[in-house]
Image 1 (tube, rainbow, N blue to C red):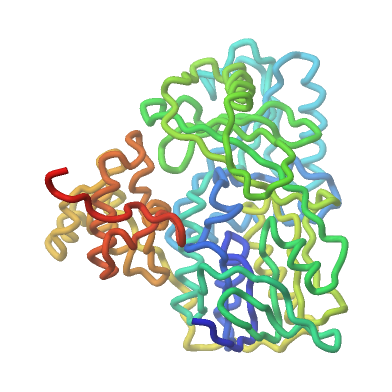
Image 2 (spheres, rainbow, N blue to C red):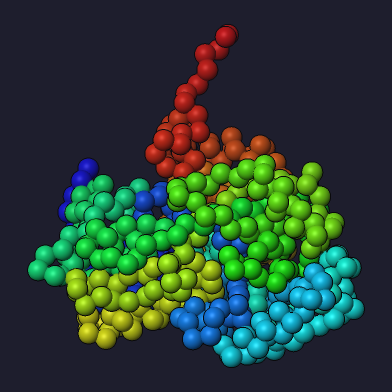
Length: 485
């Protein structure tokens, strides 16, 4: 049913940037709405983010990317700690495959120092192999970046959204913005699939669609270049194959193929950069896999293709300037656009949210802190993360934590029920997966999909055929078979 709603601030997009901004603004006396075209948070560009927190060495000096990346990296430990999300400061390697590439490492180091990155140093082959024993012995050396790290991007975005929701922010899912409403050079709101949403300020964090949405308000110059990156997940028995993200020296199109450990214990490789016309093209191909696999093996020879348990692709929204664009145009007033927030967007998220808050304060709206809003919120941990004593206490309170649903990832029925009834309810198969990691292990849901489906059906009071993978049109089952056929 369509209905018109009024907000002080409307945010388009529930990825890492949109949810971080929503959380920061939720401390104020404001009515805030977040519109998301998908069925859950972290379902667009952020979904395919590897979770690497960059230090800031790779961005061109003087750019907004460089400044915000370095500042965001320094804020990340507290940013995560405040929400109960683990941040691992494990460092990063950029390696030279031959001696002729070592000067490129020196140039990266010099650039990083200009940007304000600390602790950068060039290491030789001997130290590289000591720090990364499984890396190719033919490599010549590396730039070691100790301030880089890793985070579970899904848990981080969900925690940000939950904190915002606890503070009264509305999340409106399965709702695509069709156009913006402008009257007398003033932005009035958005026309969506679920009616008109009016607001005093609208913040465009729509990722690959940010340019199209800006165009609907009469603004030009915000075109997006969609670039697809493909990634492949190795079985957890390869845990420790690399201890930190390992890159080759970057090329003009990006950072190139990476081999890196994930926050969930798998090792991933990938990160090619393919220009695509269709920003919904998430396909992976044999041709591109062969190219990525060859480069990854050149970096870490121990990678085995037969141990790949999953593959995925994501789209990066690169601006034509190849820099972040975060601005409030003079006309139409009341509009803030974030355009081209590709890598290192995740690393910059803490400071981007502060930057947007400052833009609002600087002439768009007076902001007043609400003493009733919660300034602290921690996402509920998974049962597997607890110590023995805590596990025993949880089981005494709720026996469902004693029932394993996902064997690969050790996810319990209690974890899944908690996710379904959290401040941002996980009401699809993918939402449960993102919140708990159920179905993300070696069997890729083969063992637990049916169980998750029935738990969702029971807790959401819906028949199984109404449960979807990720929203409308993705029903998992269509009905029951007839007995005797």
